[in-house]
Length: 150
Image 1 (cartoon, rainbow, N blue to C red):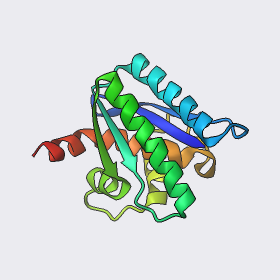
Image 2 (cartoon, rainbow, N blue to C red):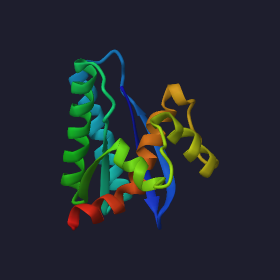
Image 3 (cartoon, rainbow, N blue to C red):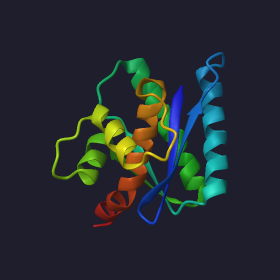
């Protein structure tokens, strides 16, 4: 299991962190590890807002369950940290960041890598897409919150 966390300050991406669970561990043990990573990240960054991206891409049921569980762990870790937590579909996130374009999921990586070349982006198929998805969610989070409060 690969997942990522991104940090934004003053509307600019300031960090992108990739987490990889131990493939030898059970799915539930990896969820505990993911929870520990998120708890550590929340303590380190003390975020005011956490935006959890929900995948809207159709996958098989086993993958969707695993994603839903990981998203749930992120929501709980965020709530426990005291941050406001919002969720948004990846399509909504893309429309917030690029309102004048029809950006596809796999284009997010190239757009963010170009805009933020200072980060150590992994290869797209080796965690880079996860980094890009986390960065996009973090950047769009304030708008998602604003819309939910209306």
